[in-house]
Length: 97
Image 1 (cartoon, one colour):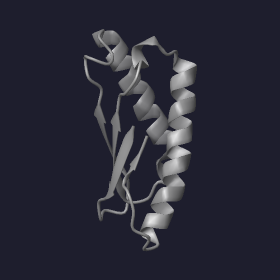
Image 2 (image 1 turned 30 degrees about the horizontal axis):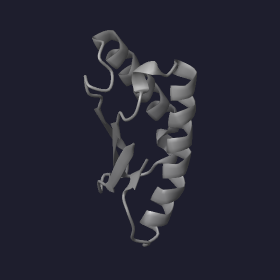
Image 3 (image 1 turned 180 degrees about the vertical axis):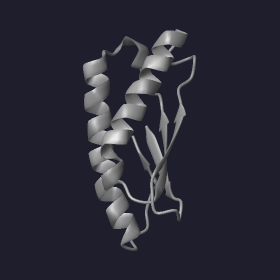
Image 4 (image 1 turned 180 degrees about the horizontal axis):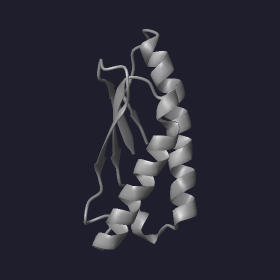
């Protein structure tokens, strides 16, 4: 799940909540964090002035890197369209699951 809110800075910021409950091994949590950071870095140009918080849900520990990347890709593309609508004055929910 990715939550977002406007930050008024003109550039996106990233936060993460990768819990031990969802990803029990520390090296796997670090791997997930690196993957999220790299994916965010590649997509930040289309995200605008918003804060994003990526929260681990489901069986993240059991998934492989390719499925994690595909999920992140979908989230960033979905959020880019939602952020552009939100910036244009449309109100709504500020989360994407």
